[in-house]
Amino acid sequence: EGGVAQKQNVSAYTVSHLEDEEGVFPINDYNHNDDSDGLHLPAGQHLLVDIKDVDSAFLNSEERLATAMVELIKESQLTLLSYHCHSLVPIGVSCAGVLLESHVAFHTWPKEGVITMDLFTCGGNPLIPVLSSIQKLFGIPRTPLEDEDEQDIPEPTMLWSHKLRGFREGFAPGYDRERNSLDQDLGRYTLGKLDFDVKDQIVSTKTAFQSVDVYDLLNPGEKSMDSYLKSLSNDGSYESNHPEQFGPNRVLYLDGVIQSTLYGDAPYHESIVHPAMITHPNPKRVAVIGGGEGATLREVLKHNTVEEAVMIEIDEGVVELSKENLPQWQDCSDIAHHTKAAEWCFDDARVRTRFEDAMAYFVDNFSDGSGHEEASYDIIIMDALDPNDDIEFAVELYTSDIYIRSLYNALTTEGILVVQVGEAPYQSSPADETGRFANRSAMKEELARAGFKSIHVYEESHSGFLAPWSTLVAFRDIHTREYWYRNAAEIEVQLQKRILRSKSGDTSLRYFDGATMSSYQLPPSSFEAVHCRQEEAPTECGGSAWPVEAAANETNKVVAYNPVVERRNREVLHSREYALGNIDGWKEVLLN
Image 1 (cartoon, rainbow, N blue to C red):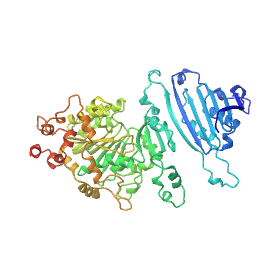
Image 2: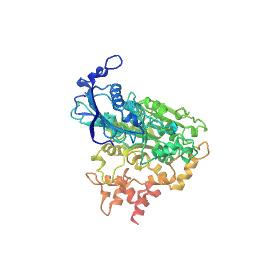
Image 3: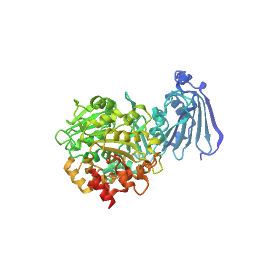
Image 4: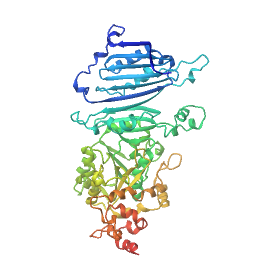
């Protein structure tokens, strides 16, 4: 079965012999013969498709398969030059088509109901939209037998992958892989994988500022396809009664980079918001920079102390697209019964949205540190671009001294700045200042120069990204940091007092609690490792006298960022002596 090709019923067709009903073959109407579409670049796109549960008669028919292939090329606006289909002994068909843009080929296993296909093009047209045509033309459901119920016939299942092939950099003038969403997370880790049981495109579009893609993904290593299908039934099973536990993961990509996931929504957004919010004694006014999908704002609104939440997002299009395609991210219905709250987070009476450049807003209003019309903020949360993004605006967000000084000026005396600072380093990673995260290193230096008294980094491993994600908190006043080191029980008491209850009376938090906060109180050991790999290794990274020397500089002030001291003197650093900056008392504890 599916064996070596024999010269039995071998058919060969050329485009010149094919006509449509009107006697005209229209495939060549779509012109790919100019250089502008990249036809002559040493690069292309490769689409691999596997379909199972396909009708066996269709899979063993040269004529039907050839017709489907010709129609596929027509709908794809590609240029078919010739093709050949071969019937195999004892069963099965192989077909190959020569395209002006490259080729299409497939092989069938009729008895098993399987067809595998590959389509390669070096033209300018994207191949992802072709998938719907492949499903329609080749995913023919199996014909039921005489004694078989049609409802028992499984729908054809299609697995697929899309890869960029060849070379673009150095051959395509001005090509920047950072600007090609298919050359980022979306292409490398999602579209390029063949083994997702579900990989459905929910939306793929562009706003005025960036590309937006949303996919539903079911990874067989995380979820069972059988359990998912059972969750869609009404058979009274556990799966059908709890479908939310078995469904696909919905993932948001901006310019091809993973921004948020359904599975990681609560761990990521609760971890970036609540540690700083619960550390501040009374956060009334909060600013959110970025976070257009709305989940960061959602978490801020769960604090009963918040009187105003100002969201500053440059791309209104992301907010609108998220409302339609990521409704869970902007859903505040669970706390909507509280005063001023609303079903949709952006309708909350405490929310003020500003669709503008956040950097310009802060620099224009707070750069000089003198009196300004805008009121100060207790908390500022920057959920924006990653520090390793190789674009000019991302560099400015993390390194501009004027902008960072403006953030400092915008905070109240007890204010806290929160910044997502990208992928956490590995133990073997180079120093941030020399690696991909030079912007992260520069930001810590700028924060200290701006006047922040204490800088802390923690990581969360369940955010749904491809690695643990790190967050930075910077305290304008060191006294505020005293609350950072409260024990789990103290945090739980504060959460009970602070967090708005759900309609059922339970906490509205799904992930964050006192024990989780305890895991954030010390920086990860990997940050200690990269800190000590700086070109000029800090004193505290070695030597018997490092603890005291690391704690105070020549002016006897606590050093703002020091993961080594935090980790190696954890018991001392968790004391109120350190938190309050009492250097003399802290030294006494250390030396005794």
